Amino acid sequence: MFRRLLLTFAVAAMLGGPIVDARAAGPTLHFRLGEDPETLYNVKSFSLTVSSVLGPYLLDRLVYFDASGQPKPWLAESWTVSEDQTEITFKLRTGIKFTDGTDFNAAAAKAQFDAVMDKKNASPLLPLLGSLQTVEAPDATTLRFTFAKPFAPFLSNIAQASFGFNSPTAVAKYGDQYGRHVVGTGPYMLKSWDPGSEIVLVRNPNYHQYRGDAVNKGAPIADRIVLTVISEEGVAQAALEDH
Image (tube, rainbow, N blue to C red; front, top):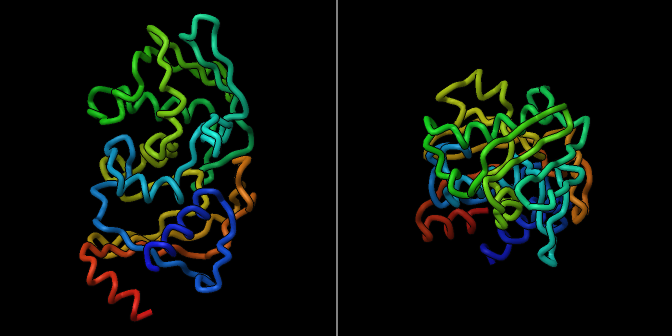
C-alpha cells in the first residue's frame, strides 16, 4: 500500500496533474527518500535519488516523451533537425522565469550545457551529450546544438531529469554551495534541507505546466512537499503506520 501511494503521487506530480486520492487531502504531502542526496546540482550528479527530487518538483526540461514514446515540446516550443542530422535548433517558449525571478531563455539554457561540457566540472552527464561540439544562443528564443556526427539518443537523453535547467544567476551566487540552494522553473521551490533528515519544498504559485499530457496546467495543488530521509524499510513502515 505504501509503495502504491507513493507511485500514485509521484506520477501525478511529474505530469503536473492534481493529487486526487482522498488520503492525500491537505496542504502537505509526505514522501520517503531512501538516502540523503549528495547534492541537488544535476551537473554534479546523475544519481537516481537526485533525479527523483529534481525531476518531479524543481527542474523542467526542453522536451519530454509521451506515453507512445514520442518526443514532445516542454520548455521548447519546437525544434528542427538539419538534413545531415548534425544540427538541432530549438525555439524556446517565452515568458518563463526561474523561481528567483530571472528569465529562462536561450542564454540560460546554454549556460547549463556549457557547465556540463566544462571539463573542470567533471560532469557525469558529459557522455550523454555524445559528439556535441558547440551550443549557441543567437537570440533569446533560439538554442542551437552542433554535433561532429549524428547522435540519435540526444533527445531522449535531454528529456531526463538530469538535464533540467538551473538559474545561472543562482549558480553564480551560491558557487560551490549551489547544490543546496537549487533554483529551477519547476512546480516547487526548495525551502529547506536538513541533511540526513528532510527536504522541504514549497509550491511555486506562478507555475505554468507546458507539457501536453498534464491534467493540471497551473500551479500544483499541494502547498508543501516533505521528503523525509528513511533508509530502513522497517522504519518507513512504522512511520506510515504512525500517520
